[in-house]
Length: 164
Image 1 (tube, rainbow, N blue to C red):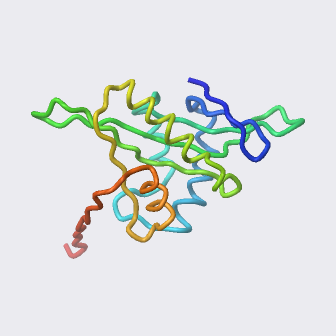
Image 2 (cartoon, rainbow, N blue to C red; image 1 turned 180 degrees about the horizontal axis):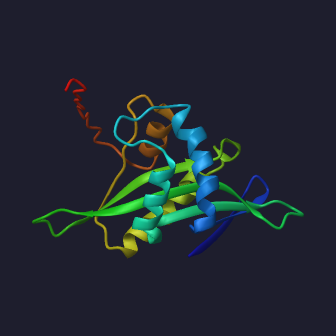
């Protein structure tokens, strides 16, 4: 797929992720997911980025912009998704694992555009329900997803025992 739109007076392309996109995506995720929030069950690291790309490459999207006079595209956003099939269920679930945008492109509709591309990709996979998760204190993500119609917040309890 290859989807283009204009934001910040620049043409942004959303396309399938390629192996060369992984390092800039990892660096962007480091800024987004490790400095502003912590997540007990999903840790942002280089192995997660590579594994997400290798396991579901058709459900990985990247947003790029090509600056005037530049030959190279700059990564300004990304999304990783996967599908889940449960035993004894005829439904296929979509799970939007990660969605991130460069701080320079937040508030311009980029995340919504990435989300819409992912919806199309999940539709192609014949998914019936889309799931997302975020931290309870991530007000920006909660506002974004609620604006898209998500609801039915559920609390999860995580237990750990480091005494062995």
